[in-house]
Structure formats: C-alpha cells, structure tokens
Length: 189
Image 1: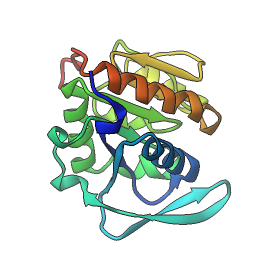
Image 2: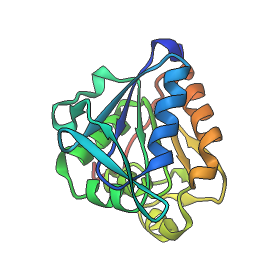
Image 3: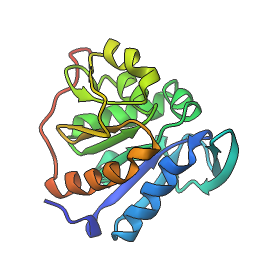
Image 4: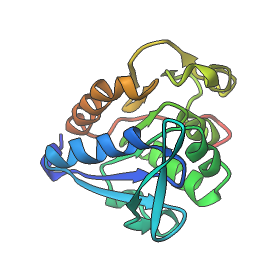
C-alpha cells in the first residue's frame, strides 16, 4: 500500500491534449500531496486543445525516452483526439506505456487515451471504457467495452470524457493506495 502523499505520478502527453484531462488530475493529485511529473516526446511546453481551439500550455518536466517506470507509482494518459493519436505512433511513448502496463502499477487513461493502451497491447480481455467514438478500436484490441464513468481492471483505470474526471481522479488515488497488481498483457507482448 502506498499513500498518495508519497506517490510520484507521471502524466504523458503532447500537443493537443484535452485541457481538463491533463490539468484536473495534475492539480487535484498535487493538492492531495502527490508529486506530478509531465513527460512528453518533446522538450519545452505542450499546448492543450480546449473545446474548439488551442488552449494554454504546460511545461514539460522530462522526455519519455529518458523515463523509467521504476521512478513512478502511476501513469496518467489524458485524451483529446490529437494527443493520443500523435503518441500512439511514437515508439518511446508506446514502449513506456507497455512497460508501465507490465509493471502492475496504476495506469489511467481517459477519453481517447485508451488508443494508447490498445497500441501497447494492454486491453486484451480487460474491462474498459473510452470515448464512445473509439469503442470499436477498443473492442478490436480485445477490450470488453462498457459505458461507465470509470472502469478498473487490475489497476488499469479508464474513463469516457471530462465529465468523468472526479471519479477518474478518485479511482487513481484508490488504486495507488492498493499498490501493484499482478497482470499480463496480450501474448504478442
């Protein structure tokens, strides 16, 4: 069991992340005492997508290619359409997500971010939710899709959209307290 006040949490994103899906976990988990680190595939700042236009930016704390799963208790993947679509073709990002999935540590993806879990081979046989438009992608990756605000399967947390953020964040805290979970990925991994 790990206390949220002792947790170190990575948020992996790039330009085009859904503003609320990065900002709210970042701020709310910091308020609870966790240390948050924003990882990306580029240095400097990454810019959000906020409803129908580019929004504000957040500073990048480190590059995912230099990150180690051993340094974090949890990984949060914000959605939006642009962010996960760009990350799912980045080998460093997918390698990090895959390693995190294999670690048994808390792994949380919201909105379109389950695309990243699909790319990393982390959905096969798992109960999961996502933004409804990627339901078929999730199911084609072997996920058992359901329409719920938050779904947890062996510390892999998924939610549908920004309206689900309170339940999503609460579940991250709960799963970090529970600690590592034994899990396997699809046979190809």
